[in-house]
Length: 195
Image 1: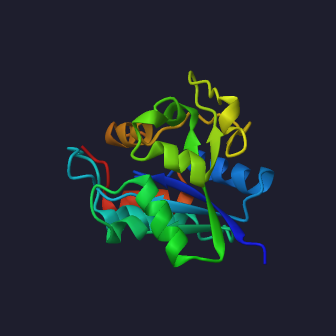
Image 2: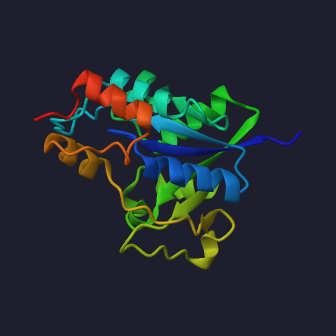
Image 3: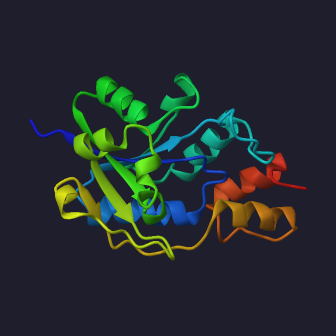
């Protein structure tokens, strides 16, 4: 039996924006992935993030954003794990919980450039497929010995960041075009990211 191919797209999604959806949509439509799972990462206790809403609020924003996408799912797996959680542990847990699936890590070329700083990066590279999407100013160089597991994907570069969205909302800008419409309504109704 062929296993379901699932891409893992992790982030704080603070907030989720259209760039995230464009990227996930591309990964689903133009690669071998059957589904893309958005893994919402919990607040890292080692990091001081003033404008990081509660985990459940960010999870709800992602759930709202993914309502119309049948091949996207949201996962709170890391909410139930020891913190800070590491990608290798998350992938292991997901693999244990979903024996009918194979997981691929989706990362940006900026993260690939510092991949050797990740916990158990050699195991990650050996045991999982990795799809690398381009980020402005970060070229993904993949040594030939990793070419069976690590692949560069020519996804469109969407230079929208959650930081830009947050800072703009804080400055009183209307950011409706940058965030899924129902998520934007949620942000406004909750008064998120106001100074």
